[in-house]
Image (tube, rainbow, N blue to C red; front, top):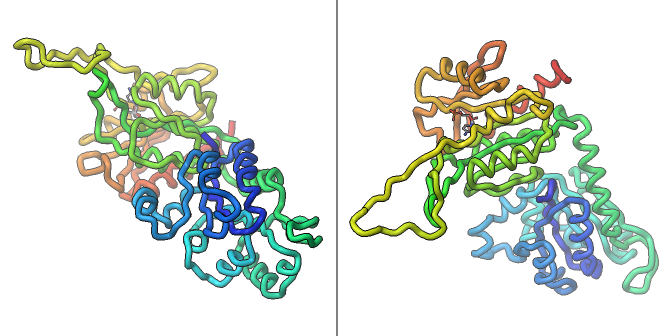
Length: 403
Ligand code: C5P
């Protein structure tokens, strides 16, 4: 999976014909994309071409029930690391500069909380028009970034500034943008592997044992570590959550698959085991659906122990991450059990949570962080805030012991 994702908004100019090439250039640079195609843009490039290249739906209408039910336009505007407008037409530039939102593209641009990079493309006279220049100045002041336009021969026969920057140059500019943005991030240069969600242990092709873990805490931690500059791999059991932008996702089912995925994601500096791994799995997995046999109404099931992923990764050795963090979900005597778990599993920190309430699947968490130095308790907070706080603690740890 791509490490970075952009929301590509294709405006309605002749340069929109370069959009498929742009999608491919982004892909070559490891940048995935979702596409919004404006009405005018669809006169120059077909939604089918872009959908085939991105292997995803192309979003075109603000009030599309199917798309809105799957991913609302607000979420769409925030589901990527950056919003790229290419070509950015005089019309789109004017709308955003003046806060107008009357279609999906302009609405997403107003609703996003992500950086916006525009690659303008228009006729040279339009580009030089004081109204366009005024709008560009407004957008620059609002923090919008620009690449191009280039100078050259135009489709309309004129010559001058107004050609959209070449797809390869846009992809390179995005890489440079992210490199610069991550320069002062505390976990820059660090690699992290996070496990999240439940595991699913099948005993026939359609039945399995699992648990109620939603994956929310693990996904939030992967996101917070990526925001702090780390290169993150999230190994996730089956969840209903969307991929985390900027994080390399590996989706697995069973504990054994999760362990294998974690091991192949090593070496890493940080390992955070948040997944609620099933302790046992059915000893056998039938190739066909189990059926009632004669008068044996309920077949007996033998369970065998699953590998302990955390304990395995925490074992001393050249590949052991420098900071190994486990989670402990306890209903009572949280500190005593968490302290014991730290030693038993061989990890450096244990993040213990009291699951006597509705933590599993809920939005908030109350944490006790147990380290070799002692423990600290954090007040109840949303899982996203717990994640940011943990990422801060990890950053502080590497600052004081950078080796
Ligand atoms: O032993 P317990 O399941 O309470 O330990 C919880 C911690 O161990 C969590 O960090 C969980 O992700 C990890 N774990 C694991 N593999 C297992 C069981 C638990 O990584 N098989």
